[in-house]
Length: 78
Image (tube, rainbow, N blue to C red; front, side):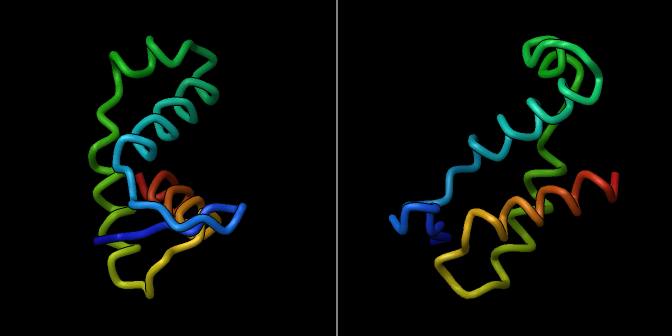
């Protein structure tokens, strides 16, 4: 199981849905639309899958900052 170390030090299970939400919000911000409109036109699964694959290779728990970096790299690769 993938675990994440939050900024306050808590260690929690990785939540795929949180990455999906972050990708949709980032897409909405770039497009100048609402998250709801972005969600209707965007499939965040490829980005989330790439992030999950990248962090599976790391030592657990993974920091929030490491996940953010992986999301940025996955978004830029698209």
